[in-house]
Length: 251
Image (cartoon, rainbow, N blue to C red; front, side):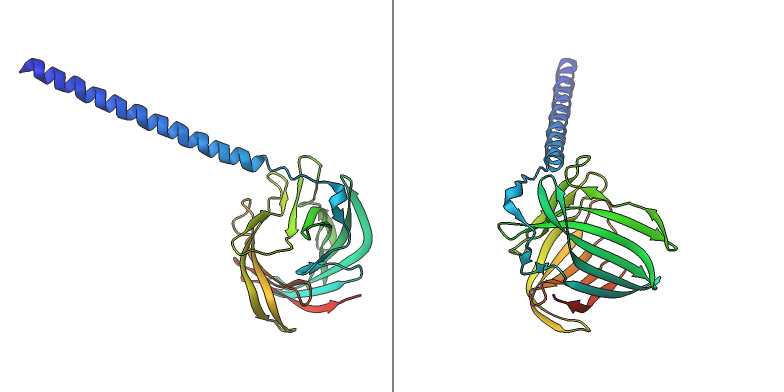
């Protein structure tokens, strides 16, 4: 009887040790899979051929003829925010690609808050690519810093797609990649929408969800409409801020 008891104990130990080995192996495999996924994300490496890009931006949701001007307004907890966007005649060459300078100026209660120069170009397939931005942040009317600046090809920063030519619901794409600094993503959530703002009613619009893994509170729904070829409504999901197109001037 004593011998049988010893045998049972030994068998039980074998089962326990074997189970622990299988669990450890599974965890190792799971971690390897996770590391592989993270590695794939870090290895984002868009293939940029300058010959494929143009400064003529005609994307139906985001057209940028020189001289186009758009004004947006939003009520915030800090007061009235006014955003003035102008498509300038200036260009900037980035890694061989000639880009359009998209000037974005933000005012808060009439005081200068931010000036951003975005650099954009259109691929031959109609996608508008984002090659970086140079940012001037102001506080109390004085230049504070340049936080948010990144340029494709510098310090590991890489271009992304600002607006695809064809919007497919459920599709997700990277708008930029500067590890730890700028990692904006975009998901297409709806198409064929009719949207009404204070300025007008728009049809056949597309709604996108913009987010970044760097800041879970920075989440927005943006609506673009082909009748104006631009953003008409920006809804911040955390603060409830609603920024609307209030004026548009075409050249």
